[in-house]
Amino acid sequence: MSTQRSSATPVAENAFDIAQKQFDIAADLLHLDANLRDVLRNCKRELTVNFPVKMDDGSIRVFQGYRVHHNIARGPAKGGLRFHPAVTLDEVRALAMWMTWKCAVVGIPFGGAKGGVVCDPKKLSLTELENLTRRFATEISLLIGPDRDIPAPDVNTSPLVMSWIMDTYSMAVGHSVPAVVTGKPLSIGGSEGRLEATARGAVDVIIEAARDRQFPLDGARVILQGFGNAGAPLASFLSQLGCRVIGVSDSSGAIHNPHGIDCARLRLYQRETGTVAGFSMAEPVDPLGMLELPCDILVPAALEGQITHRNADRIKAKMIAEVANGPTTPEADVILGEKGVLVLPDILCNAGGVTVSYFEWVQDLQSFFWDEEEVNARLQRIMVRAYQNVARMAEQHNVNLRTAAHMLAISLVADATRTRGIFP
Image 1 (tube, helix red, strand yellow):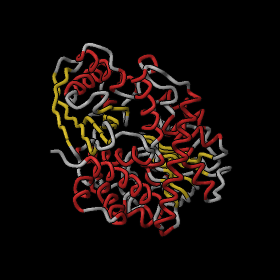
Image 2 (image 1 turned 120 degrees about the vertical axis):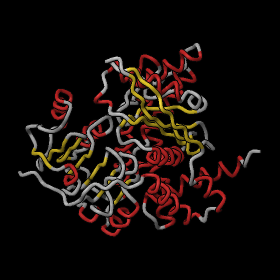
Image 3 (image 1 turned 60 degrees about the vertical axis):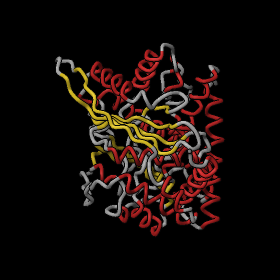
Image 4 (image 1 turned 90 degrees about the vertical axis):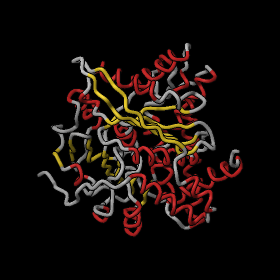
């Protein structure tokens, strides 16, 4: 099989513009009061920091980072930290807004936050990465705290990074504060089931949506964009349901095998080589072109802005399960809707991660921990209920699932904001 090229070219679209457009669509349908619209359409606070880090060669390098709170009317701010060279303030604003809606959709008492550092962690040594993390944690310490703002892992961050943040914060206050972050190692207050939570939550939503629409999962062809902490376990869970994974990509390349990819072997290969590219049991393909290959379920599980008006008309999937945040633009949503593609929106489909982060936070505060079976059972109940609530909203208002999820979330956050009033 020859390498396929896509005519679509990646053009950066402003993530915050996309988030605000999605908000406007739902707010119009809710006939939301103009004053509330102005409050919810914007972020509450934004912190930009420029901080020095000592490198291994003795030099000092200055990095830029952000922490943004969108809304905290329903509880402490919650959201991940990403380390990536393309991080921008508008991207972090968008991710914080999506986190607000995500927490509301699944009914957990958090507001939305997000953070990031402009860096390429692949070019940093472990010592440099730790120095950067600890200094950044110190810089944003005026915002974070177990009752104020609880960071978590995101793109290119990990349980180890969370442990450094937890330790840095704890050293500053003079005692251990495990609840200041989630996604930590089990040895310092992490939760059972957290590593696979995003994938499990997505599978719960996929199963419910497939049942609703008599969509057979046994034999369904799946393409996964992203094979990391969410994509890799999701591939395993979908395979257990009888799905056939035929395409996989990561930041280094993409592979395709129409007969199916052995994801367990691929995972071992990726751990040995650091990439899926070059896997001998599949052919290389263009990463963007892979999104357009024939399949039944397409899973964007990488970065935002992957499906736009430039390539949406060439998408051949019947269902798109958004495990990434913001992978589809509003213009693409219109095109996909006209084609009859079912889109399971990010603020519902990938909410399993923040749900189990909430469980972890609760367990840390109580110093009382649950086993994995209980965590997974609680997660499934919440995800199934959230899907049903969104599907009901979609049917009542004759809208797609994304708009329904936003309408549900915005109405809940608006009610909390209205009820609390304006201080002073």
